Amino acid sequence: MTNRTLAILKPDCVRKELIGKVISQIQSAGFRILGLKMVRLTEDTAKGFYEVHKERQFFKDLISYMTSGPCLPIVLEKENAVEEFRKLIGATDPAKAEEGTIRKLYAENIQENIVHGSDSNENAMKEISHFFSRRELLEINGWN
Image (cartoon, rainbow, N blue to C red; front, side, top):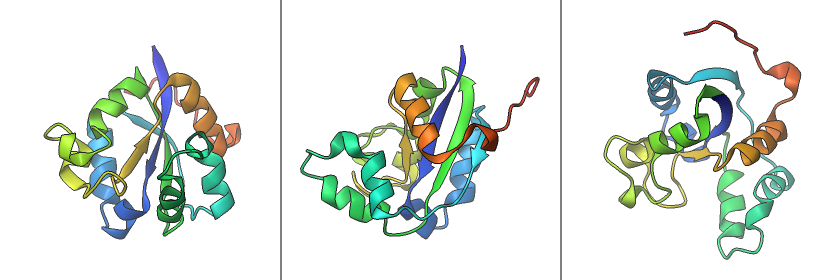
């Protein structure tokens, strides 16, 4: 089933000037980009997006990191998008990520790990709506 997922190229990706390389890898894996924008998260926006983690010990550091510079939310579409994107990006900890994954190639540590990917279809829809209105997303039929 073709569905969507949200990717966020995080501040370390932007800072390291890896946007083009990461997007190229995403497109080479067969994902279609339906929406993309560069944003600077405010503390409130970051807290709202990562609310699920608010009780975790790393929450404060996560918010600080995600507001430290611009990032790029991207809506992606592909067959089994969530699962396929998570395979492409690799484990949250780049030291445990498989060879060739985005995090293994470019991430330095578990926090500054280059990219976010939705963890379920349900969360993907919530996360997409956090950054994009329906009008901002392209409806592309017949693209291969």
